[in-house]
Each structure stands twice: as C-alpha cells, then as structure tokens.
Amino acid sequence: MDLRDYLHVLRTRWLTVVTVGLLTLAATAAGTLLTTPEYTSSTRMFFAVQGGESVSDLAQGSTFTEKQMASYAEVAKSPIVLGPVAERFGLGEDPSNLAAALDVSVAADTTILVIAATDEDPVLARDVANAVADQLASTVGGLSPERPDGTETVRATMLSEAQVADSPSSPRTARNLAMGLVLGALLGVGVALLRQLLDTKVRDDNDIAAVTDVTPLATVPVDPTATDHPVFMHDDSMGARAEAIRRLRTNLQFVDFGDRPSSIVVTSSVPGEGKTTTAINLAASLADAGARVILIDADLRRPSVAKYMGFEGRVGLTTVLIGRANVEDVVQPWQGTSLDILPSGQIPPNPSELLGSRAMSRLLGDLAGTYDVVLIDSPPLLPVTDAAILSKLVGGTLVVAGADRLQKPQLRTSLEALAKVDAHVLGIVLNKAQRKERDRYAYEYYSSEDPTLTGSRVSAARSSRRTAAPQPTHAKRSTWPGERLSASRR
Image 1 (cartoon, helix red, strand yellow):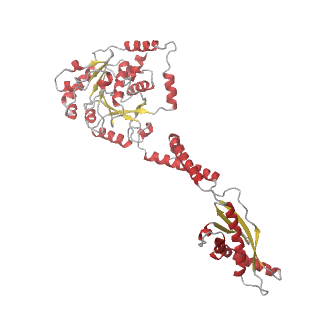
Image 2 (cartoon, rainbow, N blue to C red):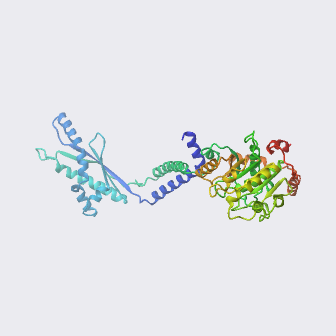
Image 3 (cartoon, helix red, strand yellow):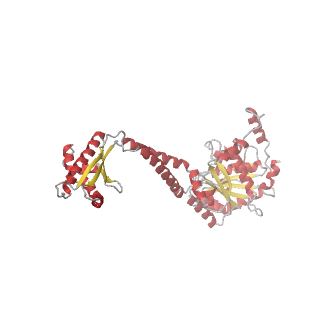
C-alpha cells in the first residue's frame, strides 16, 4: 500500500478511526476519574564530610561523599531507617510497604539526596518524608567511621522540609487524556487498516478491479424502497437508478462492436444481489429506446419476474419447453410497450436439465429471430449451475454484483465458473452501491422536473410518455438496438 491507499482507507473508514479513538479516550478518562488521588511531598538532604585541615582534604572529602550517595539512597529505604518510621506512624512491622511509597534519588553531580513520600493523605505523606529524613541523618553518622576527636565523619543536613501538597501528583488528568487521545488515534488507524485488509466485500469499482479485468458497465445506487418499486424505470423514471440503467443500456452498445449478442443472460453470484430487478429495468430501458425485447424468467427455482411485473406466472417457459403450449400463446406484453414477458411457469423438478435441453436451445434461436434482444433472468451462479448452462446458449452474460452483499472470492469463483464453460462475459453491473457526494449532485440535476409541471401535471406528463412508448412490432430489426439509442432520444 502506498500513501494514496492509506489516505483512501482513512477517508472511507474515518468513522472507525473516530469511534476507536473516542472509546479509548473515554476509557482513559474513566480510568483517570476512578483512580484514587495520591499526594507527594519531598525533602532535600545535604551530605558533607566534616572538618578538613586543607583544601585538599575538603576536596577528598567531597569526592568520598559523592561516591557514597548511591549507598545513602539505599540506606534510606532499608529497614534500619524505615523500621522506626513505620513503628512511629503505626504502619505495621513490615517496612517494605513503606519502602514502596518512597522515592529516593540523588541530584545529578551533587551530594544532595531527595526523599519523596507518596500517600492518599497529603499530611501523612509530608510527615513520612520528614521522618525518613530525620532517621537517615541519625543513621548515617553511625555508619561512617568516627574522627579522632570522636565526631561523625559524614554529616547529613536537611536543606528543606517537606510541605503538604496542594494538588495530587497522581493521576495526572491532562497528561492521561492527551496520551489517551494519541493512543486512541493510533489504535483507530490500526483497526481501520486491519479491517481494510480483512474486508473482502465488493463495495465499488476498485474492488471489482482487484478481482477481474472484466469492465464494470454501470453502477446502480442503493434505494431502501427498491422492493416497493421494482420497475423503477417507469415508477421513478427520473431517478438516479433509472439513469444508471440507461447508462448500462448505452454502454452495452460498445461491447464487442463487431459481434453484438442478441441474447443476454443476467445472473449474479449469490441471491439478493438484485439481478432480477436489473434484468427487468434493463429490458424496460431497451424497450423505451425502441427495441423489441423479450424478458424470460429462467430462474426455475425462485422465479420472481411475474410477481414484480404483476403477471400470472403459472404458465410460461416450462409450459413451452415440455410442449404443452406455443411461445406465442404464453408471452405477455407489458403495458402496451415493445417489451414482452415470458414467465417461468410451474417450477420443475429438474431445472438444470430443462434449461440445457435442445428445446431450450431451439426456443432461444426462434426468439432471437423475432426480437431485437432476448434477456434471460437466471439463478445465481454459486448455488446452482443453471446460469452457467444458459451462458453457453446465448451471446453474452451480464453479471450483477451486489455492493456490501458479495465477497471478492465469491465474484472470482463465479467468473471462473463462467470461464470454464467459455461463456462470453459482457461486463459487470455494480448494484446497490452507496451514493457518493458527487452522485447526489448529479441526481439532483437530473431529477429536476420542468417547473411548469407540478403535482398531478407531473404524473400526467409521465403517463403520456408511457402511452407514447412504441407499440410492439413482430418484424425483427436487423441491428443491435444500441445503435438506435441516439436516434430514439432525438
């Protein structure tokens, strides 16, 4: 990953960074508030060798004292000093607890010893520090050899007595919160990067490009009300999803310019990616452009085209394949447009065998001779082999990838399954994608109506556009409908 990739992760997963950072900061603040405040008081002691007849003697004495300062610091925390202090304050017979509350250090390049005592009671901390200093001063004299005149060689003098602390030394609220904020930011970035590495969901075109070289032909945005309006090309013809389908229709004309397929299978990797609604609205869009289109519901396991479009689906494809009806008798026109629907019919016990039969191949050939485009809604690729079987019988396959629904390994496996049967993959449609900010601006521009059309007049205008849709003709056109898109718009 380069710097641009890291910035992309932070931009797309900023909520993770903020959430982890705030949680860490909150945990730090809670820990700080729940910590019992402690107070620290300190005293300073000066050690010097007494007497000396010359400057040389004084220098030697000072050097001797400096070398002994580390020893004096250890003596200050030894039982010989702390025992009497603990007994004096009733802190128990074991002075180790008192030693843990002391911090004894030597000021750099000096003979000054700093004794600091910490306790929840600021007064007790002061008294303990002063008591340890007094006891150490009396103890040091007995540890050093006496001078010829019987006086102590080393003398300890208290430079400053410990005072009652005004504010607690622990916890340090400001420092802890600052550290919590920094640590939270680092953890948030780490979690975001880890999620990015472990996240295998397909969310945008970059994720598709990481799996395959197959071109994404269109990106259809997500709509929470999709189940209420499955045929959004007519229910919401000015919406962002409708415009995405028109873009798909336009892009299809540039696929295999010299050998454009007249029959297309629309499939997906797993259920719930929106392949059926994509097939329905693509068919409606092609019909709006003037093409004669037939949509076949070949999902003989969970058919839904008839339900979405308001048709009776008990008679249809399976009825034709078993020879109980002619295709002309079961095809149903949709709302007076050039789009015909062939429902699935009754669900058979052997869908794969029926879809791969010679009867299905003959049917597709006959329909390709009658219609400009034959669209086939098929089952998902991974659960069953129906879509792979159909892909061998048609001119091309369109794969629908559901954003936040499909995993990258699943998309890769689906494309590999199509490659094994030499299927011609026309492209990928990213469905249910989250809208970006620029997409919202484009949608607002596109969805703006004529200001003179308001309320019922808008509905009447849309209704008139639907009524003016081209009527079905039974003569097959000789060209791919994409070539006539510009003319149809004019």
